[in-house]
Amino acid sequence: MSDSPYRRAPKQIIKMKAVEANISKIELSVVMPAYNEEGAIEAAVREVQEFIFDRLPASELVVVNDGSRDRTGEILDELAAKDRRIRVVHQPNGGHGRALRTALEAACGDYLFLIDSDRQIPLEVFAEMWKVGRDRDGVFGVRVKRRDPRVRLLLTGVVRRSLRLLFKVQIRDANVPFKLLRRSVWLEARELIPEDTLAPSIFLAIIGRRRHDIVDWEVPHQERRTGVVTIRRWKLFKFCARALLQLLAFRRKLEPWTLREQS
Image (cartoon, rainbow, N blue to C red; front, top):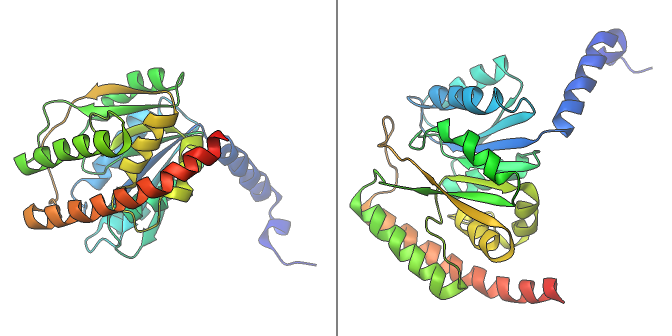
């Protein structure tokens, strides 16, 4: 006979089965990469609890701690110990794109909500966005009056024009960290998005816009209150150059995949 503690604690077995049943019925997964955000991460999680968990009890938060060197991981573990709807994944630092992909892989919900941990887009607007998104395949946030450095605004314009040229899609804010999508869109796209992709959110936006019922939703944007921007100026341009090469490779993979799906 097994000496599993579950044989000695039938009440615990019932509790665990109830948790498993709830997990299988998750309606929404909030996915959030985090790196060195000890000054903001608790407030970011509290906002999810207030504006999403309180509205959608069948939801979860998947946070990927991307090798933070401050107390981000410790704070997340403390919060998760008090709320089973919070799941924390710790991994060595691999960049925002890899962390986001890890979070998407771990998510269980029928819908996925992609956000960042810097709180630049207030979650108060989620309720209206959810009403719109439930009747569609997704909703893309569009930041109005962005509070970012001018160089980032310039590069956003370059990305917008590049996507229109390469993929024949019009996406106003392709890499916005505020996207609501059916999980089926991610499952459809994942085979085309390598683990080392720098900006998987852009790739998801392309597939979503080309093949699904997606609408835009304007959202407010505010200045970063804590933490630091880890990619600046010259590093940002190098990042964008690498991302462009990845987009070109993605385009080569996307065309035969699209034809195969249509046949």
